[in-house]
Length: 405
Image (cartoon, rainbow, N blue to C red; front, side):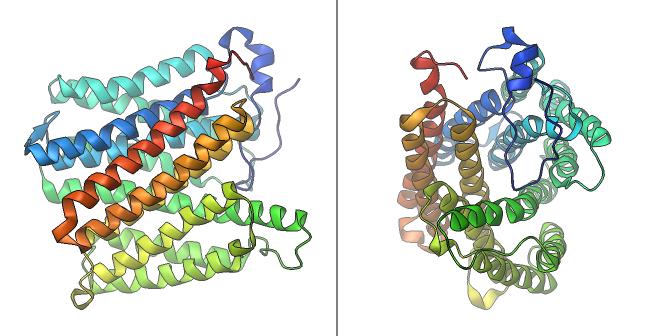
């Protein structure tokens, strides 16, 4: 079978890895396509890093891996957790652009090893080695994506391919400038903004497309309109608001831009008519996008003192909420539609999506209720960690029953 050459739109998921399997029979099911090992690795890291941070926070540990403890937590949850998820999706999708075989087998195993080294080496190595280990994975993936972007045909959406190198640079700067709290916070917000823009750009095509197909299949009279000028305008407004938040999160002009972007994103979400759906996997994508709306609006309110919205709540609406729930919803759908997990795996993914949203809600609420802060923080962290453990379990269920894709 020849490699598929149809263009990837954000309304489709990466193609089945059958071309790779035809040419690489020794790769096996696990390393046949990038999203499987990279999603699994990210899920385990996300599940472990959150309870570990709760212990570090309550124990009063001051420094981890040569970074202030809070900076290390931000680094692992943004620049450790997010890149393998983005890479898994994009590297699985790029063959649809170029017709080349996907990254699989030993090269894919090497990428996973580079990512793992970036998590472990900084714990014991001095800064130069820590920086090199941490940089290896994002730089290697950036090089692969830039090559694919050059081979891709004109007219295709390249948001993910363009944004990943930005994330890689921010990751390096965050590690290098970690001793400067202000610069570290700016770089962390840069990583969050990249993820939020990716949700707005790719999710803004994916969610309405899947919703339209589901509603049309039920014979609904009104379905989401195709991507058009309004969507472009909303994306431009968000592209102005998020950099303003990165550079000046407390400024009035940032609050105005964030409020405008949040209201426009809310209007966009309502246009998709998600309340008519009966499909849990697509509703999960709507919920993830709703967290983006909430994060933008809370960030706007947190810049206005008379609203008394903690900046921590806004930050975690974008991270634990938008990033955490949207990535899990996309990973669950992709893994269930492109893998042999069966009904048991799908049930685990459904429970995972519910848990990650509940955990995010408690984490966002914690700063608002300081008298219950630690209990809400711990419970939210437990639910968030459980969500990614359930997803990881869903991914290894085919291996337990001896199935192959």
